Length: 179
Image 1 (cartoon, rainbow, N blue to C red):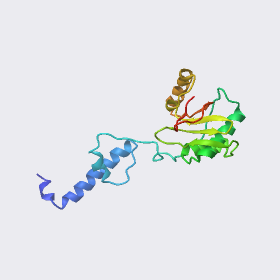
Image 2 (tube, helix red, strand yellow; image 1 turned 60 degrees about the horizontal axis):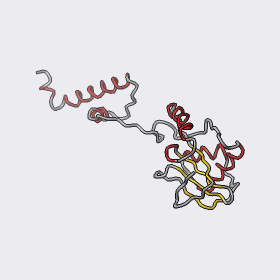
Image 3 (tube, rainbow, N blue to C red; image 1 turned 90 degrees about the horizontal axis):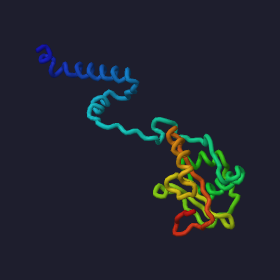
Image 4 (tube, helix red, strand yellow; image 1 turned 30 degrees about the horizontal axis):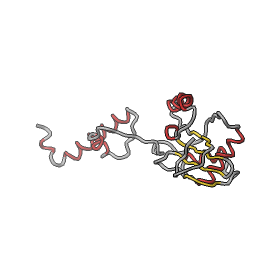
């Protein structure tokens, strides 16, 4: 009964108090509120999806560790550097790899498959040097797949991005890499 006389002028006060209390409740749950009206919008949300595109982080990457199985370290550096130079990829992953391995064209490219979201890898056949591919584990068909899969899964559980670098003696055909 006491609220009825407040309409319509008291609604401004009542709405402001309600939104302020909402901000305080969210702040206690460590949520940052930029605009008061977001509380009303949040009441309608059933699912909240977050991505890793730099919204919550600075969007940079760095190579924290790498393991070689059939490459010598200096050889690996030269091939990764040459592949990055040939493909001219400019995504965040390529920038981190360039910082680690350099941007020198040690080998001359013959056929190039630039990175694409469809393939999830890039590949280059070098003149007289074989074919090299770099990309997501599940999209590169490689030998010793089961042995490497366990290690890849361990790194992924830690939230790390795992990039596979593979060599093939076969040339790129039909715009596909195969070992």
